[in-house]
Length: 335
Image (cartoon, rainbow, N blue to C red; front, side, top):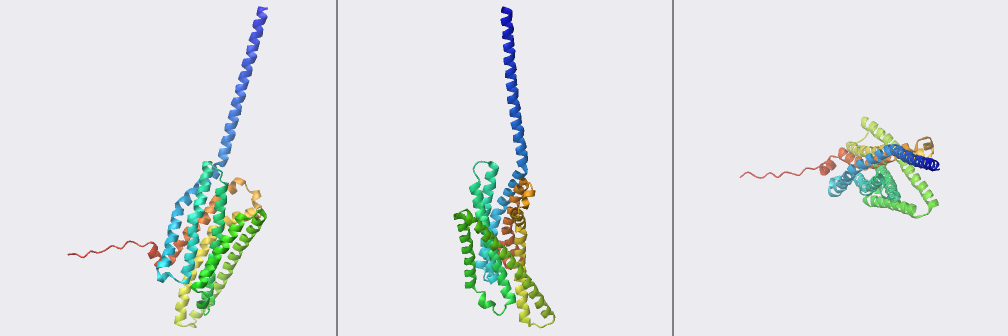
């Protein structure tokens, strides 16, 4: 009996130890599996985090420069009478929207990306705030570009009527109307229910497409009109005063062409990405690829606000002198 009881105790102890070892082994396996899955998920998120980090760094560096340069452009047009042409006034109004990009759009984007990387709070509110700013600024910039193009079209195509159409008062009315339209559309979109938001998306899309089509059609007309004037100048069918006026208007036209071209190129990545999403062609693409491209395309669009004042300075000597002016050194007389 004693031997049998000892044998039973040894058997029970063996079974207990075996079960404990199996439990420890299963826990170890589950822990390893969890670690592996976390590592896999982390590895999968590395490109997205790299994209967010690069976009955050670029916008953090360019944000103060965008505000500074566009503010200097506004001050230059306001303080220098030589720069207060109708074209420059409209470009200064465009600089206000570009400065707003540095004040609001880029900081909200930086906060959104930074808190996503830190994973501290819910970023849905920051994302919605950034979308609010980038939509509003994009629409307002497109409308201002349309005004700049319209001013050049009237100056070259309808020269005799230009002084009566393009006045300081009409410019103020047009600029204020663009701001009212932009703010009203964004407030309605932000406040109304889901169905109205979809309708507002359609309205914003139609507005942007209409601006782009108007700008393209206007520059086709301006190109043909410029060729006609050049032929008349070669044939000496224009008086010298008209030739000088046309040369001045053409220089302003080239500045607007550079500005519009820079805007189109900057917004092209975002437009292509939105086209893929709207047409549902993005279903064939990996969701992670779209996530990586999204912050990069937004960064390209916002960098346009930094390019515009550089173009103004490149094209206009007086603007360049005011913005990049050096402190004058006083020469003291020698006694």
